[in-house]
Image (cartoon, rainbow, N blue to C red; front, side, top):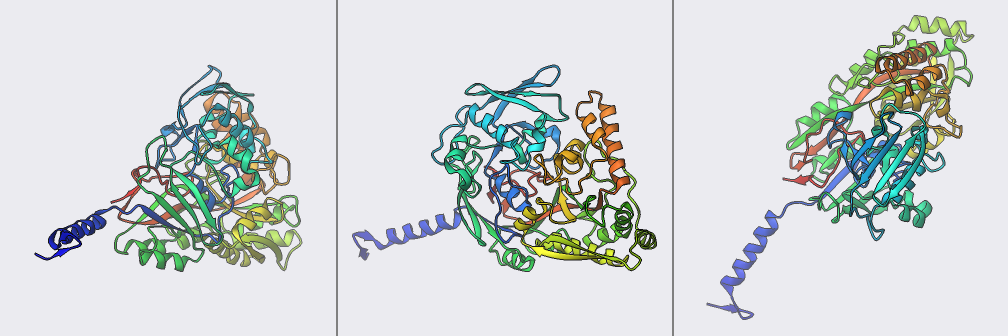
Length: 517
């Protein structure tokens, strides 16, 4: 037998075969995701408002409590950074007992009550949070010891756990990291979740790696490449070629039907439904005239929008908050009627129609929806002059009250108070110190929205929410368009580790159990 380098050739060959077999058998550990985006926006989770950002921050951060992975049902809320909690009989004082040994990403040490106090106070600060209005009922947040936090409310709220869950302002961040990084925290976030920030290459990708010290265990996925691919066609081709393992889809029946036919593809359509609404600024001409607002409402053809998007991915709204919310009611939306729309415009002094300049996002799905609405309104003589901007710029501009009509698509924690407060409470009006997303400057239902928050009787509380919805519809603060479910596609080799029925981050949660089969 011939020897090679002192070893028999047969031994060398066997070793090579074993190494090759091991390499073939080794599981894939890099997840490549394609997102419909030009770039990432803000990765500070309490400032992340777009789907692009929300999806990614959910992989990096935790709340005091969390929805069970794959669920948006409040009944599934359970422990996250807090192991247990209790509350006073009047539900105004809540005490949370934190996990011991939770590590921040990088060299920022252990998560303690000081981080929780800092995070929730920051979340309540409109200068440092996009969700400050959610925390209006907070009186004080205190660290009783390194692992115990007490929250005292000014008055009971419909769902305190919904405010401190792993969503929006409820994410907990590292105080030390935020103070050290300053403005850089927006682009270099430090969390405690299963994945941690590595880098961002503008207009290309966000790179993450596994948090090997994650308190629920080391993730099976070791790296995530979150790639920015605004073109629907480019994302689809990248998925078909195997370049992507997971793709942000198109909430369109044709796309769903076509994609389901691809080999090794699983299309996930899941809750929550985002309700797309035209928010009409009642303080700006010509929208200060209710007849013009009514004309827009009559010109919108919701059944046509459903037919355009498809029955699997959309449904017709009946109110100014999404269906499935506690307190939802059929609020009596105005039906499609072009003749009535034209008559109202003429009565308002616009017999030959009118033109309104509208700022809108270039995000493909939202742009396509708006273009359908644009065509519908044109039939009534209402011309929308769309000023198309990049998605992050769109969010900045509409929050400066620069567009008289704001197309906004959103899902929120599924209790009527949250959506009503953020979009229709005058305290949430954009351009004010307590601004959230009241783009219409609506104030007609303030009394009911405020009263419902502290109403102890469940039936009376729901009745107040329902009255608020009917008032908002009657005043035409906003025109509901369509409720759209989330649609993503993944390779059949990707196992989330749970049954995906819903995700408030609007994208699949990638957890420590997610893996390739």
